[in-house]
Image (tube, one colour):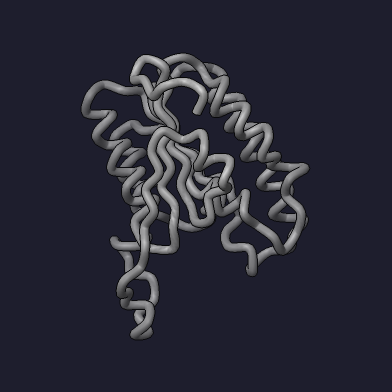
Length: 183
């Protein structure tokens, strides 16, 4: 990044990689931040409000704003359905970020969305706009971007990048998503 990391400016943290724990790390950070009096906003780009996730249940109880604006995984819906959802989620995220009311904003699975290659997304979720938003967000706002396959340009301007790498996973033994662990 062209400027030095600074807690006054606000930090950009990226959790990426193919291992488990990216969203979990970001949500743990949200809990820590709320404990310190931060106003926190979580926007989930892939997860759908049609499903119930544990983080939504507890964040509603804690008063943490969390919005699931996606429609689920790319192989379950049409490209156009995803494009509409991504455009809407991005418009909502930009508006809420520029309000400047939050000290921490988590853009969960935005990296996944930016990395979609099965259909075009750059016109509805332009990487250039995401980079501009990171650079020009309100002073003092920390941003967290999660998801696999973070774009090199995002990695370059981030203040912290953690890559989760799988070593072993129970999926390999045929165990599907577990309530309370994945959802």
